[in-house]
Length: 342
Ligand code: UD1
Image 1: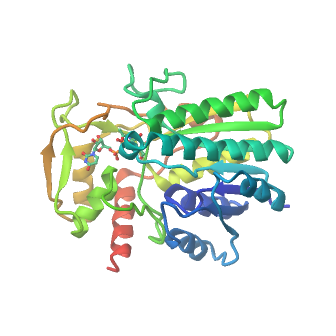
Image 2: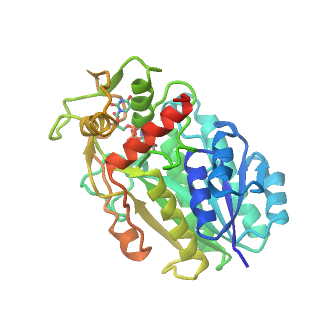
């Protein structure tokens, strides 16, 4: 019997890539999404890639407790991966109540429904943002969490704590894994799914690809006076397909009884720091395009340098980031061209 994984926010950027990898690894998937920050492009792409025209899609809002409870009643859910959340750092500073309400309520509803239906394995999508400006790099799972600098970051920390407490109190009904993503970038090699930011992108790679295709005039590199080798910030850019595969490893770890504690946390990154300028240069080189960019002042809230020590995930989950930055940037470019119909 196939195990069933509920993917909340499964029509979005990360959710759609995870759905593909789960299906290709023999899991059954129920995609649930309220389409508040995406359209059906990626869901349709997932169906095409996997040949699963019958893939279940539930249009629903995870802030509606009755709808979440119904979902758990309707399907026999073995594990849930919770992506459904708002994720724009700047917007969260302007609309904190909206962020807390959406990101906390939706997760609490998942946990409540999971408990009401006999328990579940819960994977929460967390972020390296919980480490803030680290004292030491690379960061391990033991590195201290720093006070969040935005309501968005705070919701990630709070959901981590909520899951930990809920697992602890559940007497074995709930098990949890927190995956702390570094900077997910790229697209599926088929170019049928990828990142679809609404409006002006906040994140670096969509801004690069949109500039290269001509939708944006010029990329601003925020700060070239950081204490780093070339003056620009260092990040750990993780390929979206590699990241998606980490979810399959985490789900099977939970379902196959391989966990060493009831709530575990893993960094999901490459362990390789790349500067903004290096990323821009790599994009130009691998895709043979010239990018219009200029140096601009630092962006408020940016940390100088952060990258992962992913050895725990490597060792414990048997997962390792495999794709090169060049392959990832080629995939991101292929996706942007696909969107532009080129
Ligand atoms: C950001 C969020 C982080 C979130 C992650 C999700 C902040 C402070 N952090 O990470 O909480 O989990 O996205 O993907 O917003 N850059 C430019 N020009 C641009 C855009 C970005 O130079 O137009 C630079 C940034 O200054 C940074 C790097 O590129 O040094 C990466 O930026 P971004 O893609 O926004 O990710 P983070 O800020 O690392």
